[in-house]
Length: 255
Image (cartoon, rainbow, N blue to C red; front, side):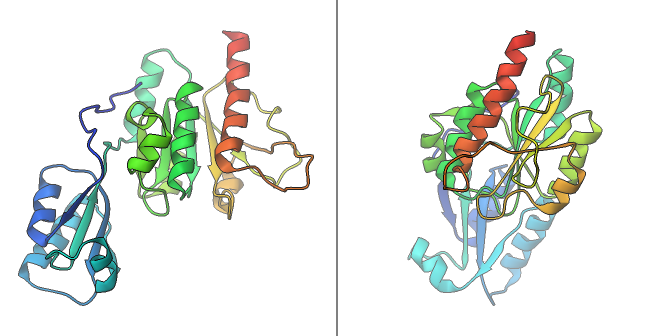
């Protein structure tokens, strides 16, 4: 796979205290999530806020009760979780794939929030030849020890790209020559219709809301999985496996 740093295999670490969080950010640690107590201030906190702006890190304002549930130690109103993986940028990965003479297969996960689903999807993606997984910076499952375990270590192998401007990232994929295939029930076409042998980004949505409408509007193909039972949908990790292995089947036929 492409430039995933295997040296960052620590479990999610909890870092608390304003100075400790500042030093973690300056040291280049990947911040999975950051909580700041509502209503607090001070010179050191202002330094932290400036750093968050410089590094484009989003913090959640929360009541002190939430912080105390994480730790009762002297957190000073600030707690951060450090990611066990290093996130990458899809803009760096796509050129690498083409330079190697390979045909990109990218998996885009639109607001998958369950960590075990994330882990299971990553495992299937790695096994089916996906080059990278793209997720939004907000509204996506944390890559934590549960996700790592469920992925059977695949999250250490397959690049995960987390982007703030999710729509802009998807448009970048399209502008780079990848067709966008949305897996959605809002179509009459089945997943067997698109040709996955060319550069492709497969987009999966959350079980609650599916793929967001603005993505559906710009997609090149909409595709659904045939359903014959009374239950209306598959678990998203299972659905992802179904469509990825159709893409893999087509690619094996021409290889």
